[in-house]
Length: 290
Image 1 (cartoon, rainbow, N blue to C red):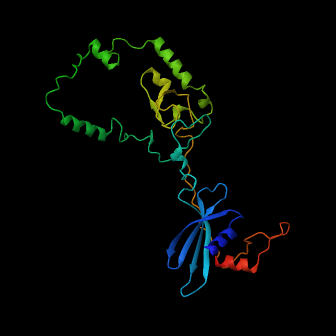
Image 2: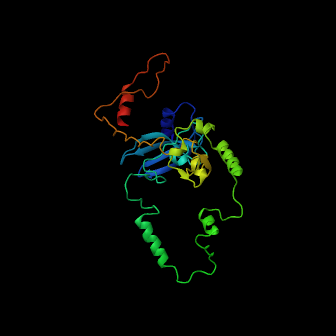
């Protein structure tokens, strides 16, 4: 224990090594002693000094002396990538959120090909699915299904236009609603003023039908402050799908270890603070063994 304490005091600053708090047997003739660390900012840490005795030897030697966290040590939280730390509502004006090139929330838009996309309503896959669902329908229609209006009647035309309601939104009501939405998520907001691009070119914009579709859409980006809201096509935020593509992290170069020489380095400062530290033969030998 005295040998281990001396090794800990030599590695630490004066007055940092505290009381002996336990030991652990690492194997045959190998024991690690733990001493309390009184260094500020290292609450719960311990100086661990491993001592060993060779077979049939009478002298105990020191293997290593390190500072290790104890069971109640204060440790830094586990590092989490920024893409996992980000939560909806964290984005502010001027912030830019890159999107991955293979983001599962996005898919290619118009490709110029005549063949419709697989999830399109006019694709062959969707047509086969509709036919399969129609085959499962029984011959007799359910009793509670609404009766379709006669073809060519006023009710049929109104239903086709989406106006088969007792009352519909007037032009005044439509304009006042549009003014409210434009004020909350429009081009004059601080978020839109600092955005890299407008929502009209964003892949997260869900189009809406009717006359409102000419000026508004629904945001479907969970990290945007307008998620699930009706936004102006001139609105924008840092979560634009095409604003910036997330770069792939560079691969670090393999480490180069030179084991052919030993660099002398002083393990303790010289007694005179004004003089240049020198390295003794004992320090160089100890560093070479470590």
